[in-house]
Image 1: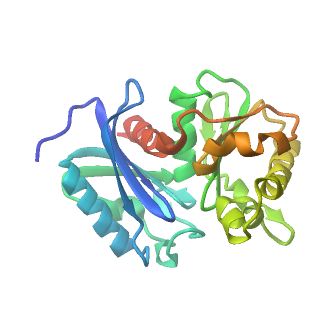
Image 2 (image 1 turned 135 degrees about the horizontal axis):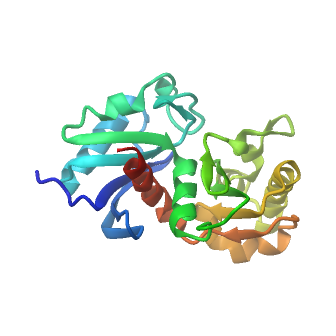
Length: 251
């Protein structure tokens, strides 16, 4: 197995429903080659996810640093919660686990933070000063907070309390599908979420990523907040790109 060129770093985005991996040119933010995609194993235990990631890396023939976005609060590489992943992950040192994969050096952080980092480095957040909030709309509601381009990690805004549960129970894509909501009905709930963030932080910009950001035209008329709200530019590949940027900054 040959070591990949130094300007190319593997980024992996682990989600509640799927795992994606791709080589990223860290100078440009471009993906090099195809993105490898598999379903997140069920149950999504540490052992099962490790096996899946090992197989992906073997298929790619990669050695070197690996950035990995993970759907949880990640503090010093230890998984702190498991809203969209198996509960066995709580308390697991993800970097120590994944570093069992020979030839690789893993750097693990929250998946939404990684997607936001990509957008701040190579997308519409590049060079943006002040407060920027990045929201991913998917299985849950991920979030990343930046101040003058610097990441404030593990915000988890989707778990802010709303109607005695979490906002993501009402305003995620999972909620939209579960309740068979029209775009207008779903956008009303999502707008409540954005209004709450707008009131607390008075951000200069709110960027929307994740799968539903591609459907911006379906719900933008319902979004009524003071701050500027726009869809992010890197969309579904942001997690992979940001993970590679994160690995490069640490390795």
